[in-house]
Structures are given as structure tokens and as C-alpha cells.
Amino acid sequence: MKYWVSVAVLFLLSVALALAPTNDYFFYAAFVVLQFVVLSTAWNILGGYAGYVNFGTGAFFAIGAYSAVVLFKWLGAPLAVQMVAGAAVSGLLGFSVGLLTLRLRGIFFAIATVAVTFVLETVMINWRYVGGATGLQLVRPAVIEPFDTYTRMLFVVMALLALIAISVARYVQDSWIGRGLRAIRDSEEAAECSGVPTLKLKLFACTISGALMGAAGAAMPMYLAFIEPASTFSLNYSVSALAMPMIGGTAHWIGPVIGALILATIQQVVTVTISNEINVLVVGVLLVAFVVGAPDGVLGLFKRWLRSSK
Amino acid sequence: MIFSLDLLTEALLFGVLLGCFYAAVSIGLSVSFGLLDVPHVAHPAVMVLGSYCTYLLASQGLDPIVAGVVLMPAFFVLGILIYRFYYESFEKRGTDAGVRGLAFFFGVAFIIEIGLILAFGVDQRSVSAAYIGSSWALGEYRIPYRMLVAFGVALVLTFGLTVYLSKTFTGRAIKAVAQDEPALRLMGANPVRIKQWAFGIATGVSALAGAMLIIVSPVEPALDRLYIGRTFCVVVLAGLGSMTGTLAAGLILGIAESIVLMFLGASWAPAVAFGLLLIALGVRPQGLFGR
Image (cartoon, rainbow over all chains, first blue to last red; front, side):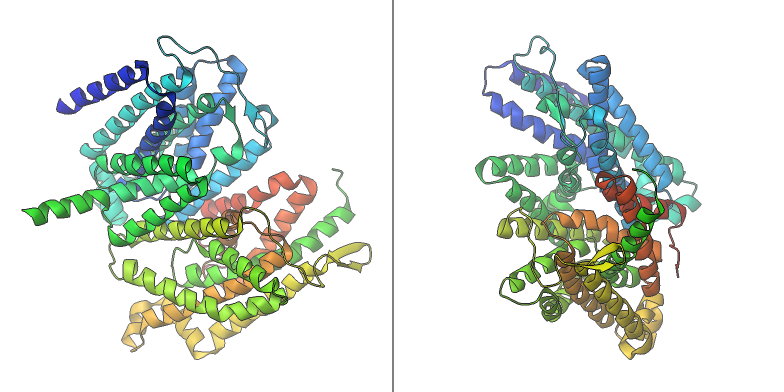
């Protein structure tokens, strides 16, 4: 109950912020931070709970974005429809990747997801309808009342999506699904022998994780009014979506949220003040530092600190 | 593009040369990942680092291949350090090494890539030597000398490593550690030191592979992303840790890529390696020559 009240409060707060006469740049940056909250929360459902490292976040994200573009160009579909479609197509992609790679574990799964990213990127590069390698400029429809600008509206949409993603992750974690996924992470054979439906659970996690990433991606074309394969399929999304839960802590749904808020905010500041390259470097260095020095992330550090201060 | 026998022959010829080159850039990974089970996704990044070091030495007037050989001892030490660090941080602790080890190497790959961007910028770099740019006329086909050089070095590397692993004492020990680590420990050998040595060799070989990379085509810092597909495709297709398999798998990839390049166009070529990799993983994860 307390959780749902705070979700509602956070959502109303984001609407109120978007209607307040503040600087537009705040929303421009906050959209990206919230997008990473969605991506890292989605990644953690498969990567953190089940222990399957997905390095193809870029693929799911981009397929969501491209589904939105196709629907928009073909039918002029509104944003909500685009996002639902993006989620559906990426969810389907997650399901098929799950089917194809069920026998694979550890690094093989991770490499397979990288391969999926590059194969799909090549397909999009060669698909003229969505602009090919050069990309496609999009003419955005008029912004929906009561918002002043697109950025503000998309900020609210992304805030809603982030809250949905977190709620899904929280539900998965606390239900039998999460217990099953954790059993898979600890020992897949033991889980299978104890009657955990490992196949179904893995497929479920792949699908739900892919769908959330796709929904996040579907908002991107409207945000940029542009789409282009190289930056949409970028491995930078993949490494960030993996680094954020690792830094925040993968055991609890709040971990990826903390990681995303910290890392994405640093990235935004660094991109503006220094350069885009340094921002990827920050991700890499923090990722290595945390997996080596603090395997349980910020959450683990916090727990240790609580214990020592008692 | 009209299909013709001439074009196909040319594609095959070029594919064989390209294939040997792919085998050579993958052979280090075949040792580090194939034999030692280290999830070394930073292998292509280390190789590109080797290319840039070659570039630095070559700009001082050194021949690129000589530069690659000179770099090998330094990369050998680098490899030992990387393995030592990986072992102390992950393998030794045991639990959950898979996820974190993988994340670690992805992080390392990105750090190397961005480090190169900061040091050299995103522009392409290339080296010059007598055999780069000219080509050898074989009947009606023209074969660039740089491909022949890469072909030669690739064969030397592959056969050298095969002989080393099967004939020498340390080489056999490396194979033994891949087969049965506890048994090796019972024999009184220290598996960590053997693995460390093997990882050093794998990284040292990557320096030479990096030199060939910059001989064959100009390099840019983000090139490693493409080679994640190519190298892992070759190693997985080969069956983990098989040296002759690596050569065969390299040839398969080279020929496939060159045929696609010739008949479908350059924009489809990057998908070949990743597509083959996906098929290999989906259909036959133990590879063609799996142990």
C-alpha cells in the first residue's frame, strides 16, 4: 500500500514539474535519466534475478524505436500506440532470442545477444523505408495539451513507464517467478530437478525484459524527431544497462534504480561539461571498479555500513 | 549483380586469404576462451590496442610486422597481469564469477576503446610499407600483397601454436588444464600458473594479430565491436580450443563474407559473422570440431 501511494505521488510530482515554468533543459536531461531507469530495471529482471547477461539491450531498444517509426510513417499512429507496439515487437524479439538461445549459458548467451544486435542493425541499415544508414527525419504531430513542449510531455510518459517498469520488477521479485529465477541463477540443474519450470521462467523473463526495453526505445524517435541505426543500436546502451544494475546492486529492484539515477546523472553532467567519450569511460571505469571492489553494488555497501554502525 | 564463375572464383580466392587472416586474429581467443574458459570479450579491444601500438612504432620507421613481433613480449606481460587480476578478483572468489567476470571484460573493452579515442581521436589510422597498396597479378586476378602477408603470418601463427600445444611440455600442460584442472592439481602442477602463462601467450599473439589488422585495413578505436563477432564466430564454430578447427572456421567465415561482399554488397558484410555465430550457437554450440 505504502509503495503504491509513493508511486502515485511520484507520478503526480512529475506531471506537476512538467507543468511548472522551469527550464526546458531539465526535462531534456531527465528524460534520458528516466529512460535508463527503465532499461536497467528491465535488464535486471533477466540479468540480476536469473543471472543471464544480456548484452543486446541496444537491439531491444532499437527494435522498439524502429517499430514506432514504421507505425508512425505508415499509419501516423499516436505515441501511446507506438509504445505499445514497440513493447510488443521487442517482447516478441525477447521471446525468440530466448527460444534460440535456451541451451546457451553465461558468455554464450551474452555473445548471442551481441550478435542479434549487429544482425538487426545490418537489416535496418539496408531497409530503405526507415531511412537506411543515413536515417530518417520525422515530423512530429502537435504536442498534446496541457503540455507546452514535446520534451515535457515525453518526460511525463517516461516517468510513467519507469514507474511501470519498477512495479513489474518488484512484482516479479516478490512473487514465485522471482524465486524461480533466483533458483535458476544459483543452479539451473538443481532448479530443474526441484520442479522449477526453468524454460517457461527464462522465456518469461526474456519477454518481459525485452518488452520494457522496447517501450523505452519507442519514445526515442519522437524525442529526437529523428532515427538512425548506428546510435540507436549502439553498444553504449548495452554497457550502460549492464553497468547500472551492477553498480546499484542486482539483488533488489531498487538497485538498478539507484544505479541508473547515479550513473545516468553523472553521464548527463559529464556529456555537457566535458565530452561524450568521457561519459562512456565513466561507465566503463565505474563498472570495473564495482564488479571488482563492491560485488553487491551500492546496496551491498549500504548494508555493510548499516551492519558496522550498529 | 550478375552471377558469374569468374566472380565466384575471385570471391573464393579472396575468401581464403581473408579466412586465414580471421583465423589469425581469433587464435589468441581460441586459447584464452577456448582452452582457459575465460570470458575474454576484451580480446578484440586488446588486439586493436596492438594495432595502435604498431602504428606508433611504425611511425618511427619500423616495419609493421617487426613492430608486431617487438610488441609481443610486452603484451605477454600485459596478458599475465590481466589474468592475474581476473583470477584474484573473480575465479578465486568463485561465487557468481560468470556474470561479474563477463561484466569486467566488457568494462575493460570499453575502457581500452575510449582510451584509444582520447589518445588518437576517432579518425582511421593506417601504416605504410612496401607491401601495402601494391598487388600481385595472378592471371586475371589481382591479389593485394598485404593479404598475402597476413595469410603467411596467419599460417605461421596457427601451425606454431598447434605444434607448441601438442609437442612441448608447457603446451601439453595448457591442454591438460583445459581438460581436467583437478587432475592436474593432483599431479602436483599449479593450474593458475599454467593458465597465467597461456593467457600471456594468447595476449602476446594478439599483438601480432593487431599488427596484421592495421596492415590489412585502416583501424579505428571502435573496430573491436565488429571483431567481437568475427573472433567469437571463428572460435565457437571451431569448437572451443581446437587450433586446426580455428583455421577451418576462419576459412568458412572468410569465404562466406567474401561471397556476400561480392554478390550482395558491403553493407551486408558485417552481418555475416554475427549471423554465422548465431546459427552456430543455435544449432551446434559445441562447434564443428568440438572437444
